[in-house]
Length: 62
Image 1 (cartoon, rainbow, N blue to C red):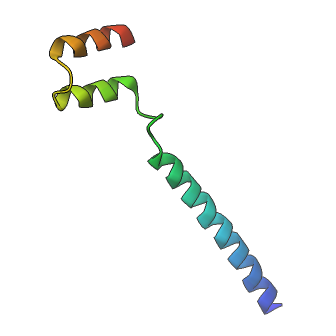
Image 2: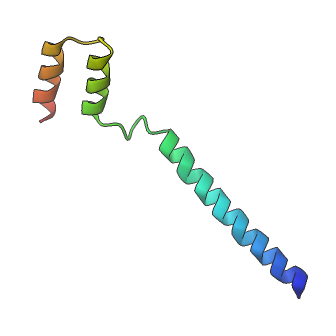
């Protein structure tokens, strides 16, 4: 009986860790989760686009 209990605890803990890992993987693949405006803000901050281009993007997304 003791080993059966340990077995089920390990199964449940393994399932929990697997689900937690899958959720973290989904968060790390957040390229799709980033909004277009956030991407534009980063590009503007890094100097990839001009202020006029940034404002145009904001208008189109609004």
